[in-house]
Image (tube, rainbow, N blue to C red):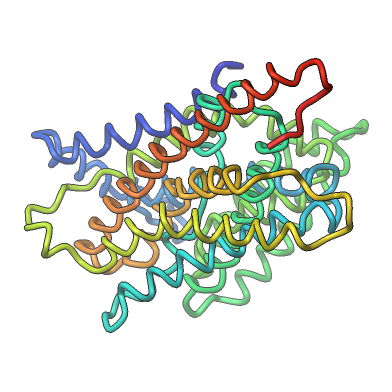
Length: 392
């Protein structure tokens, strides 16, 4: 199982799932695959009746958000975001990485009815970005990875807020209130995991988590928010252990399966000039918008915060992090499904655009990370006798 925890392996599996989905959707197997994806599974007596595709995007993906929320809480409590001085610069870079792609999307889609898709190019795929960094960044110091991790986690916070606020229509407040009560009970039980009642607490927490998810799923709020709430409510120490346990499952099953289902899209048989405005907006906003936004935000961030605490990240380093931030995949695909849920043709074009835009970002970031790592290795060999090299 340890190999599946590898950032490189996680990135490979995610990419393989997306490529396989795209290939099958454009092969003789397409009809059967689409039929399986649209096959409905209901749970009697609950009101839950979802297609297999939605069980993956609403159900399995909630596990990924649960794990992400645990990582977020860890960074806030004991990690790289546990003080204002540590969080301020990646926070400014993350905001820039959301604002600029959004503005690019809105500019390209101006005058159309598709502007509600502006959140699609704002997300960063942590697993994939860290995977590319691990593959091509041999010899890079940890500071660049820490900055990318902090930025991507803050990016996820923004993505969660966007999903909760902009993709929720007429929420049922009673169901949300009941879900909140269940989440609180889940969190309280997690306080018992280190004591004599740990087995009973662990057994009871499983159905509570499922009930919380079911209530949120029927409330009108996207069900993945339940995973976020449960992850944040859980006690820190057992949550970190649970995250370690679930990591092979999320890396090896949840993310590749979601990527496969989301990428199960037939390539439109229309001239390239007839592709919709959102298609072009996403392709430009992901690789270009992220580099400009994160680079500009990171540069502004160097003038903020206590003196002496500035990370030594050059413009080349910021551009590299920006290119890595343009790898949207998981959350961008989810936002595309939510934004264009009733427009299957636009949704399919958006999915292709996310894959192409993320692919461009993978290539660009791979080149930049390789060059940066080579430069750092050269500097280290030249200055080895003079002490440690400043981190990028």
